[in-house]
Amino acid sequence: MKISIKLALLAGLATAAPAAAQIDQGTFRVYAQDQDVGTEEFTIRQTGSGTGQEVFATGRVRVRLPEGSLELDPRLRTRGIEGDPVEYQVDVGGTSPRKIVGTVGGGRFSAKIVTASGEQLREYVASRGAVVLDEGVAHHYHFLAQRTHNGRLPVIVPRENRQVMATISSRGEERVQVGGTSITLFHLVVQPQGGDEHHVWVDALNRVLRVEVPARGYRAERTEIPR
Image (cartoon, rainbow, N blue to C red; front, side):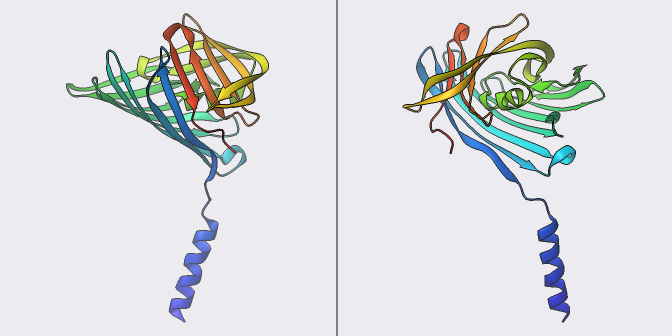
């Protein structure tokens, strides 16, 4: 009898625990000046719903550049319907290893930066409605596209320890080649203040399939079209 009660309690806890729903998962092939330099693998999952929902995005970027290799392992957690960032961590490997552990709250982004020479603390403004866009992480544009296809947004750039304003504009639907297949996607142009234009292509669910920064010769393209 005791065993049956215990099993019933465990079953009840398992049923009550929120299940994670997968929003997107895949791999980007990364190009620099049209040369294949590596990949970005990622997963985006959601738990809960409404104001209590949380989204967890994890990635693994491995690229080989003329100036050295770059390895990124980003982890982002957002909360609420708008997907407000609450925590961000990125392990940076390759030729300049370091770790950034940051939290967002009270209108500030507070980060601890750990390097071989020690630790540093950084804090800067994180405006209401800001999104995290770490340089070289294509799947982060999902959170921008979820927020808007036209307008202005504050953008947190963690590895540069700053926030910038970005203007987002839509060029409508376009036929684009992704993984050797032609598909109709929404074309967004993201213009950070004082920075280079970023071109982003997303589907109707705001899943990112292609990102280009022409001024830098950067392109990330999904290896397969998500179902």
